[in-house]
Length: 140
Image (cartoon, rainbow, N blue to C red; front, side):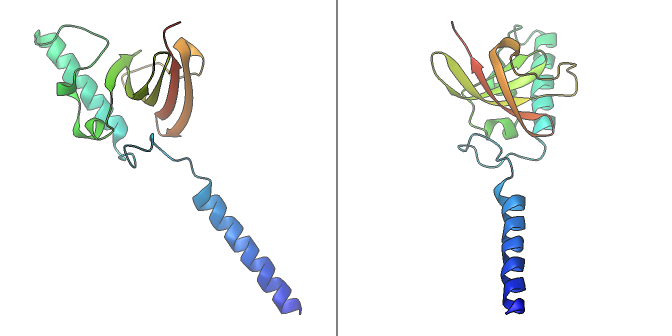
């Protein structure tokens, strides 16, 4: 009888641990793009560098929005609606409505800004090293 009790307690403990390890992890991305690449911060930095080089060479006029031609393949795989700079970080908009946009906010090494919910209408949830799910109230 005691053996059965210990077995049941042990199994409950094991399944509880597995649930915590696998079931409670933060799920990256918006669902439509699949799993996030491990090098997303580097890909965002490369996108930023491509854009800045084009501006510095005169091939691109300065803008907040970053044209698709400068996006890395990793950024393109996120299926963005648009990509833009925010305080030198990269915003990948994956869903948008008249008053809200959502997607990924990627903090890059050249930026001194640490994302904080409430700034400029953003709400952040960190999902990886320097990568955040975001919602942003726009318009109003």
